[in-house]
Amino acid sequence: MGKVLFIRQQTYNQPEIDSSILRAFDHFGGITHFVSRGEKVLLKVNLVSGHDVTRRVTTDPSIVRAVAKLVLEAGGTPFIADSPGIDSFKSAAEKAGFMAVARELRIECRELTDPVDLPASEGADFKRIQVSRQVIEADKIISLAKLKTHGQMYLTMGVKNLFGTIPGRLKAGWHYNVGLNRERFASLLLDIYLGVRPDFTILDGVIGMHGDGPTSGDPYEFGIIGACVDALTMDFHFCNMLGGKLEDYPLYMAAKKRDMPQCTLSPSDIEGDIPASHVFPGVKLPKTRSMRLLPHIPFLDRLMTSKPVHIPERCIGCGRCAAVCAAGALRHENKRLYFDYGKCIRCYCCHEMCPVKAIEFRESRLVKFVNMLR
Ligand code: SF4
Ligand code: SF4
Image (cartoon, rainbow, N blue to C red; front, top):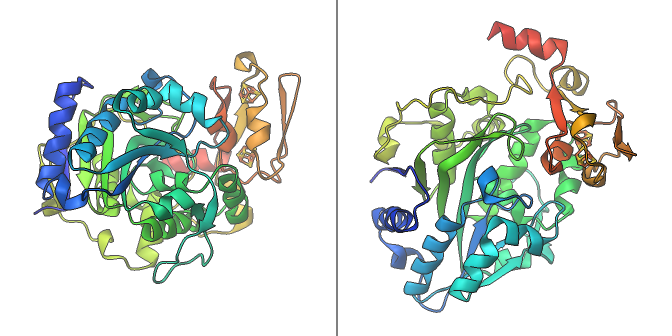
């Protein structure tokens, strides 16, 4: 059996999604292989912030509905959960369509709160990471990730989805602690992934996002649902299939540093409708930094990394950007932003939390030059 199943799926038509999700579980032994009667099952969606479904920022509710129904049929108790960066959970979950699914199926939809220590995995880089108590107490975890580009981390898929298991503002604290070093941030993501160890991952790539993801990019019809037990293998394959360079993918570089077996990819890892050689035409990947050409040196990192810039004519003056900036590098006054680029750690949380695309990236001359050479 291959390690990753890719199913061709062009629309969010519910009966079609139901049958694709059933196929995904059946391929790996069926839902009862993963869920037993009476078990509490966390459905970890991507709810980075509250957006209408058509923006394609969050996991589509049709996928959440299909998985929740299967868990119920297996006798489990599913609950939908995540922890948005800054928004109120209730209104974000309402906008994303998760609350409607919860009401319809009479299941819980709740915020991940109450930080507790995550038992460190073997060889972990970070010895103390706190995730939500609800994650630790769940009997099973099914990660329902969204396929998107990501300004800071290149791509967000199965592994990155678990960063949301860290409650609320603690996430911004981690951005600040890790600073400019993306490979180190990726190492944190690896530790979270290996500590949380979801039992199954579904990737919603029916319509994902490219360009300025994870919240300000454009929808892209990938027409695919991914399913796997090990999200690392799936994420690395997908990076390749999108035409990305694995050396530009911080998660891959962090895994390579640990000599993880998932870094050795084989076309036979993949089964289903879409082979490893599949090409997605015209996908725009982030060019915010060149990982490969220089080692991590804080001074060079700033020069090698695009900086966030304000687009005042789009700004509605909500102040979310300044509120989320853990580095204290951003001040908001009367719809004007003042960046302190010397303090800025290029985490792009301000960009991520802006509801109206009023923060963009500007490539430094050095980044432009390096990207021209590639
Ligand atoms: S200004 Fe934006 S990119 Fe820079 S540290 Fe603050 S939130 Fe991160
Ligand atoms: S840049 Fe975006 S997040 Fe910041 S104040 Fe303007 S609209 Fe709000």
